[in-house]
Image (cartoon, rainbow, N blue to C red):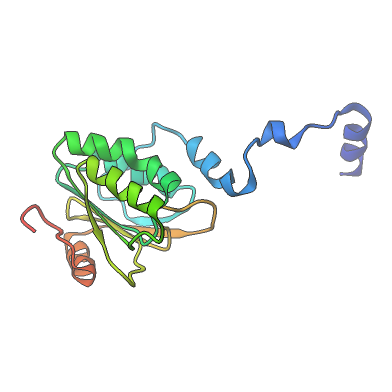
Length: 184
């Protein structure tokens, strides 16, 4: 190890960290999410645990596959966090997929603009005080449940479970009073 360090000191040159990672520390996580593979596919029926890195491509895949409904329960919604999903939610609405977002009421007027933008996409936005669940239910059978705020996550370590189960979706849906089927 010492020989390797000596070699770098003698023959190497210093790199500017700002060139390698031009993002400020709070944007580091978003920078990583933008570089994950765009061709990720998730086989039908897969259940499992995902972290803050593996969640994004898997959830994108599920959003692209949604045919009936997308319900996102995220207590916090930021412009940056929501923007990463806007195109996929718009594409879902074009496919006549119902989109519902459940979140806390915005603490300031900037949040109101975000609600308006989501509603302009055709999403239903339901604001509820004192909620803290982090859930997504897709087509009444795919449940995402865990600690990651889907509409605001930035750089914290999180975990999400993906379960392909209409029963689990109905049970969790009852806890937060959301429709989980096309008639609900």
